[in-house]
Amino acid sequence: YNTTNLLHLLRSMLLGRISRLVSPSLCRSNHTVTLFPGDGIGPQISESVKEIFAAADVPITWEEHEVYPILEKNGKTRIPQPAIDSIFKNKIGLKGPMRTAIGKGHVSLNLTIRRTFGLYANVRPAKTVPGVKTPYSEEGVDCVIMRENTEGEYSGIEHTVVPGVVQSVKLITRVASRNVAEYAFKYAVDNGRSNIVALHKANIMKMSDGTFLEECRAVAEQFPQIKYREMYLDSACLKIVKDPSQFDVMLMPNLYGDIFSDLTAGLIGGLGLAPSGNMGKDGIAIYEAVHGTADDLTATNKGNPTALLMSGLMMLRHLELTSHADTIEKAILETLTERKFVTGDIGGSATNPQYTAEICRKIRASS
Image 1: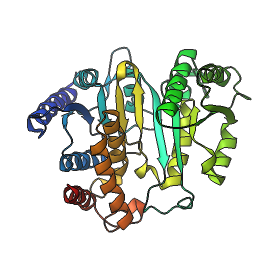
Image 2: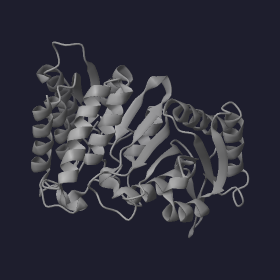
Image 3: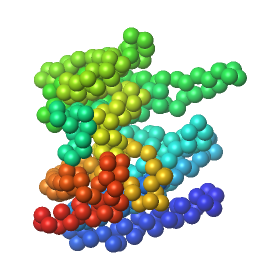
Image 4: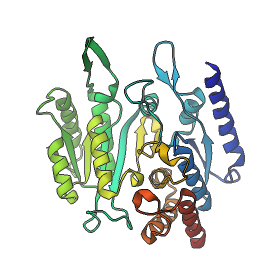
């Protein structure tokens, strides 16, 4: 550890202890949730979530940790041990956006976190939000992206063949492909979804995407009540823009899911409204806002916390705190529909504190 990392570590440990001490839920049966505020507007929108959850009297104790890259002697990147221990202990986490250098520097913290906790399935719902006008508002959008989360082009296996020639390896395994396929089909059954389409480019990448499809087909045979089909990725991009209603659950490898889920977020109004959950082995689940750090909004206090809030609602339903999630969701949707206190990214002029305060006011008024 260098001096900077030691300071980060001490601060992370202190944050975790303080969050446990000041929680209003300590006297009740509650859930301890690990919170990684992240970078840029991350701390700002994380505070919004904490305020709104407190207004709804959600029985949660926050265990907050700062996350930053630690480069080990073998060249691998990891996150601080207190943050790792917290997730393994609590099995549940909420994560803000984290900064990643482009074309240089340490491995993405998002990728490091997925690998550390075996987060093999990324769940990205895209559903029309009342009050947010898009070309699809009338007919509505209601679909779910199911993305393999640990390998593919994001395996991070790259090297220089000769000067000026770089090779990047796309890694696809049967185990990871089957894991995400099984989760997708179980999710469809549990959530009343009837149709799964696997997106691929097996006409070009016959072995890698071919392996992914073979595992999807094998799992599909175990769920005859779910209609299963396959579609080229590029064809699906065209079709969903023309008519989103023909899609329900979409299952795909890592890179495709990253790109396609941003496309579906655009159909509902942007990444500032799109929630996400990462499901892993041993029951671990980490929910996150998938937008960037929006550093330009940090000083202006205009960061939109809706994506992190909606991710938090996914987390509450996972914890079977459905009534709390419903109360908060109702207040969010009413605030968005009225449009008096919405942020600039969705056509308003409100600050983060104004938007947060209005949601809290509606929650308290309904109790």
